[in-house]
Image (tube, rainbow, N blue to C red; front, side, top):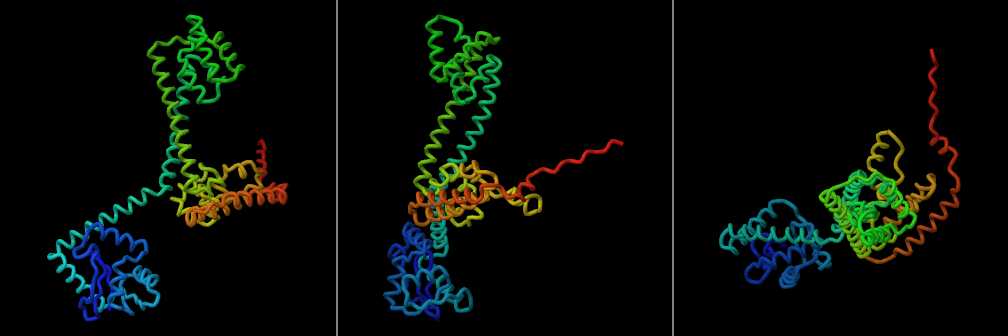
Length: 410
């Protein structure tokens, strides 16, 4: 006997090609939604009730099938059932011909069967896409990408704003290094003449605004002193309006980035708390994006995680143009970045090993072991620091640049 899984349900066919039994998804006639649900079950390696009922009703003890996945599903559900796999041959061709005739008879005409099969395929594909879209790591990838692009945009805009406002009051850019504070001063105060001219109560109100933004008396005094000695450029109301509009846009982008960072942190803590505990939400999100998803990161060995983000340096080393990289994205982690250069590779290897464990636990078991991993990491880092307090002598020699020979004058 053969068991063939079709788009309408399981069908049992005798060796001579006759139909021994079948079960239809939905009852007497195939139902689209029911067929989609049952096929989704099969793709998740679950056994639909129709398969169980058909095998039990016919009392089957030995069966053949043409699908490797069906073999695995039935062996899990019926351990005593003898199942064999056949992927070709004259006998299977005869069975498939019988199945074709059965489906045509069921739908009346072949075109109706094709129409139903296409509809099921479309709905199953939609369901798969919906499941992929609902995966939290896809949201993590989009969030970290948006944060990075927003940061680049903010940096570009603030550079232009500093240059633009520098035409009017160049000293402000030298006194205020913080970009967000600079943009806030431009937006809240606008024309710097307001701090020097006009009614005293209005002038004092603007100076008070300046104090609230800067929060540093010495810097405020410097700004006011610079205003008295600077050659301020007169601007029109339209000039001021445009400059303040750009400053407001920059402040809105700062606010958006802050909200996205908060969203990313919550998403990371909920989806992969162990990774977040070890490296924080930003580095963790970058690793997930570089790997292509949390599942892909969980399947990677520690050695690959260690150099994720340093692919160019790795391939350059493989071509014999330099030494292999010791770290990639994880280099910005404080434990590595603040460590002496001769300890960084060892710490990076330790961190990558813990990350490999964290990623697998986050993806497969969802258990929280972050505190345990973090304590083990700190303990190992302390051991590295005690064991290697000084750089190896041979590496010091390699790091020293060779002196260039002076050309002899002819």
